[in-house]
Image 1 (tube, helix red, strand yellow):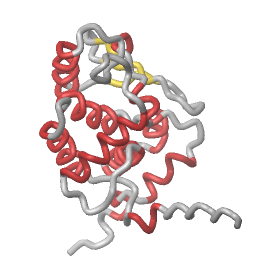
Image 2 (cartoon, helix red, strand yellow):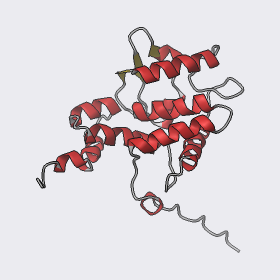
Image 3 (cartoon, helix red, strand yellow):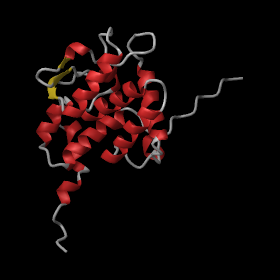
Length: 194
């Protein structure tokens, strides 16, 4: 008897109608993360940072305190997957949250650590994000890369230049960035004047 083939994965297009979140959905996830689990502060900041900086899950979990410059309010984003690294500004909400997180885990070199004081695993980050989406009552399942897409969509829908978005997200090839401007409603602004 031959073993049966494993079931084929369901394409994302059959799981959800879009691969990005609206800002209010991300805010709902951040608030939900604060309420669930013992690590609400850590989990909410994890979602905030992934969204605000368009981080891949591997980039997110590898963030270290030495990448944060509190004095100049910046963060060095070390892009993986052959991406282009850059320095991003940090806004007040992020700075306050990061200081609070650092006080909670004062002896860790990583931002996001487990109860054992080791860097959290990618699967743990995925679980945090998925759980926050469910707790926020989003109508579809959420995965970490949706936060990266949400960042790109947010920037495009606010009229930022494609090349600036490309640099912010660390894309080497602009074709990866164009997808955000293609779905931006900004392109169609003023089509109807009534």
